[in-house]
Image 1: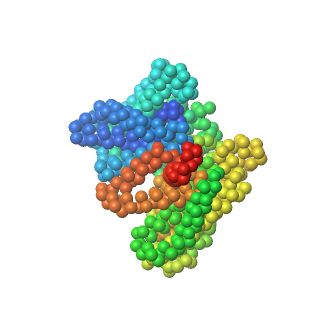
Image 2: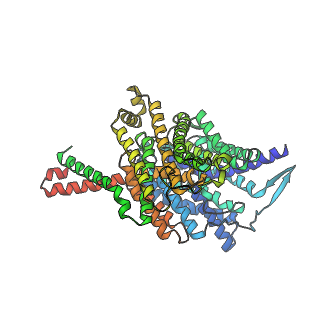
Image 3: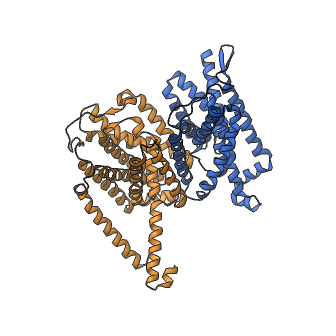
Length: 286
Length: 340
């Protein structure tokens, strides 16, 4: 029983991390109908940024995650300006292919510069701290990440629902031409949406080196997991992505513990297939 | 169509046929083994891309799952040789049939999904197959299958000293796959397929059974991809899940076709003819330099091509042809033709 609770907790904490990674992708997908294949590479770059800030200047991940957010905001905006902008209105998968090329470029750039070594940041504030809750061990860094995820996702959700900017984003997502006729600068909306999507994933990548090793391949799996979460949640639905991410985390933990570690992703992808075949537009999709 | 363009088309076709007729002579002049290697890979990738083109280009269903079919073919041939000590041929055949069956079983439910949902479902399938093959003892698990040394020749589809044998096999594969697609282009089935791509509902209203058409195209595409996989494993003399059943392998099918020009007969060959030398020569030149430089350049070029010319290299060739055509028309004093 205790083991089950422990596995569930680990799964949910991991799920919150996935939600934090997925929310940016979800925003971009929902507004622009674009899958950004370089999403996981954004995570990787933010992780490297935190790692080097920590290693060279002794900055804690809790501080440098803001730098990560800012840096990936700029990177996201640049990606939009230089690549995505030219793929809108072109054959449906051109954005996916172009960002696949970008992912390949970024991944190998980091491989070239930083070698394929696994790098772990030690001596951070949160470090390996844990505390006990009954028989369950709660890891503090993961808990903080989960809290951070709630804050960031809440902010994005609030921004979309309750600010003028958010209404403009929603209008653009619904009907681009009509939004333009209402005087919305959709070009600017797209740019900012891509930047904000990048910023959230930059924050996620920024805090991760506290407890995850950094290496050039780290992003690939995050990309796939984020795709699964967003698609499972339903086209551009942020609550959907949150629920899906939690589900993914729990299924991954259960599959990994009770079947075999290799099968944890089989369980996750199997869950996606099963769900999406039952509801072809995702849990919250229409 | 104006008669001038028709004539140029005929010339182009004639030149291509002439080049194709010369191709079997290549091993005689190209003693350089690396050049042969690049040529073999061009033919292989062109065949793979053409196999994908059936469902992905003509059928408009962007599958990222072809690494699974490719891998099944590779494992079919590999297990025939390594596990059962046979010739790879029956294994390749079984692989092709299994790939077609798997493709139908997977695609039947997945064809209900649209756009990105379909693409992501095929990603998921590749990852599932990859993990299952990693731990499946019968197929060699994570260690994969390493080929024993057997007698070289066509029966074992294996050569050691010279790559000429592989070259002829790759050429045969290429001619076979392109021949099939060429035949389908003019056949009733090819028209059905393109009709389904252009508008499924419209096609159905005209009496086309779109599900059957898409499934048949997927099965054919998967079987041909499996055949390419069988050749790939015979060429590499080893197979493991990461080599054949990975997203990177799936992406190769898609990238070569899309960069060449999806839904065109020449696209896969053009894509392979540009991408493979690029990949192999950048790897040979910079592969050792801290690693990754070849792939950085490769990634950059993918971005540039997709952004600048979404119709792929076929589109670039078309642009150049148009420009040249305009120029020659202007030279002849056909001002009105030039303006058009």
